[in-house]
Each structure stands twice: as structure tokens, then as C-alpha cells.
Image (tube, one colour):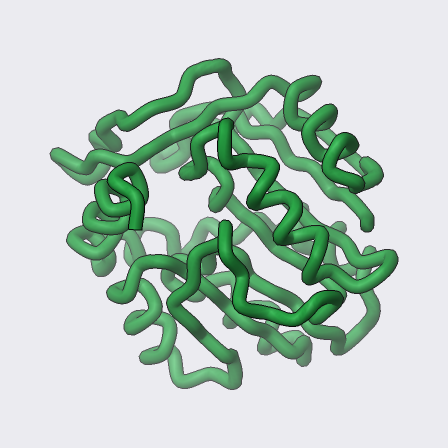
Length: 205
């Protein structure tokens, strides 16, 4: 595990219970409606960077086959305690241990934000590889220009690697990787938990 990954994973491991409580009611309802309307009923979804398993559980309850991956072992332990029919695994999103064209949809909610920009294409290429033809991916990223280790003060001293993107930048990266843009928008999102505008993008292989 690389240093930036260890710093981020250690923080998620240490704050796993608190994180789970804080985000449990924050499922992206509108984005998930769009996502599910773009993929076949009861198909196979990969929850890429599944965190506490909140979204995986919602998709599973809607009768989709779901696999959830995260690099934090504590998060995966919390996922498994949900006792739902989801295949949860500890896995690096830059090195996906799946065969080509394994999934109809990929839900990448706030997961690519922890990848350095110089490794971003590797993550996109892995996602493209495991998507079926005409498969759909939802990806959300923080709007901005910076990257590096920063403190998430919602959890006290909690260092995480964060990458920020402009809308044009991420759209170009996705197209250059081989995806086609379905829908792209900036969401101005400030509430008791969200502290930054987000870019929400739906793409197709």
C-alpha cells in the first residue's frame, strides 16, 4: 500500500463507526434514480469504494446483484454486519480483481477523490475494463484544483488524500479514457455534512 493510501485508510479505519453514523442518511437519492434508470433491472452493480455499505444495501434491497469494495478493512467489517446479500471485499480500486466486463453498472460515489491525479487514468481504465459493453458508471468528485493530504476536520485530526477537479478536466479525462458522457452537472451542496461543491457525472462505456 502506498503512503498516501495508508494515511487515508488509517483515518477511515480509525473513524469507521463515526463515519457510518454521520453518512447513513446521506444517500444521493436523485443521482441513484438516474443511475438505476440507465442500467437494466436486477443487473450487477459494483459499489466502488463502498464505505459503510449504505448504498450497497439500498441497491440490494431494490433487487440488484451488488458487489462492494473498499480498501478499509474496518469499513468492510461494518458492511458485513449489515447482514445483506452483498459480496463485500477489501480491494484497491486501482487494481480490481475482476474479469473483464463483469458489471453492468459502477457506482463510484466519492471514491475517486482519494486518488492522485497522476494515477487517475489507471483507475478509470480499470473501471472501463470491468464494465460490460454499454455499461454505465456514476462518478462524483469534489470541485476544485488542488490535491494532496489534508485534514478532514469533521473527524478531528483525520488526514486523507484529496483530489479536486474542474468539470472540464474530469470530462476530458473520462472521454480520453474511452467513456462517453451521458450527463454532467455541478451540485452546490452545503449542509451539516457536505462542505464543498460536487461534480456528478454519468458515463457509458
